[in-house]
Amino acid sequence: MAPPRFGTFSIVAADVDAGTWGIAVQSKFIAVGAVVPFAEAGVGAIATQAAANTAYGPEGLALLKRGKSAEAVVKELTDADPGRDERQLGVVDREGRAAAFTGTKCMDWAGQKVGDGYTCQGNILFGPAVVQAMARTYESTPGDLVDRLLASLAAGQREGGDRRGMQAAALFVVRNAGGYGQRNDRWIDVRVDDHPSPIEELKRVFRLYDLTMLEREDPVTLRAIDGELAVVLQHDLSVLGYYSGRSTGRWDAASRTAFTKFLNEHNFENKARDDDRVWPSIVGYLRERAAAESARRTTTAPIVPGALDRGPGASPSAGGGGSPPPKGTKGPSK
Image (tube, rainbow, N blue to C red):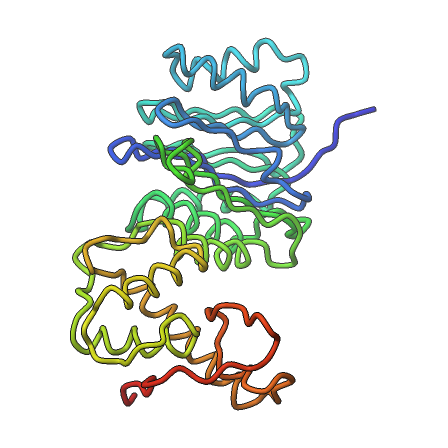
């Protein structure tokens, strides 16, 4: 049986100074993130597509780890592959050098655009404008590697992308000890396996991932928790049931304990701090959750007496009965 053909466009890129390598990809092919991207921090990144040879991933990374250039890896992999005419491959090595290959039997339009530190490639596209727009956008977009990869992918879609339509997208970025708990290099691994607008959905999912898992905010934006901000946090923590004291503006042990519980239960472990400073994104998230809880209480009829006064952060009730509302939780005016 012939291998499946699927149209895909991707960008493989590196920011060597920042120690990041990554791939962004979209295709009219389900779960494309499980097939195309391969990367290892300090080694390089690879996209294998068209009649994808997934062995290109681990074999290519092994060659890169031995110090071979992206160009040498592309040549060695394709020279040894009798099915190379139906393959497409993009590689960026540890030094940021890029190379690509498009087989002569890849379905039109198929081709690539290689630049400084990146390569864009695609097949079954509307035309060369897709990869050209991806390259141009990657070069001109400010921000870190992640911002540039997402912008490049969206630019390719605006030029038509895969001419059969959209289905799946993925963003995979590695950096040393960048994974959860610093136990691997998988800094960002976000996928949309099946969606009518996969790139926009990928952006939405990534925003949530970025909010909870990453520390990409500028440290100068960190806010000291005191005075009015402490009052705001205490009020919102009270609404959600994490804090039962008064909103005094004094950030005491009880306030810290409540805030830590909130951070842990909402998956902010990677952004927790021990210096009484907080990221603005967390303040915004807490405000939104407290507002949503307040709205819920005004529109939902309680089943258990007092249930609406507790908030999701409150300790479970042993007897199933209601608990009295927290005292002194009147918050600041908005």
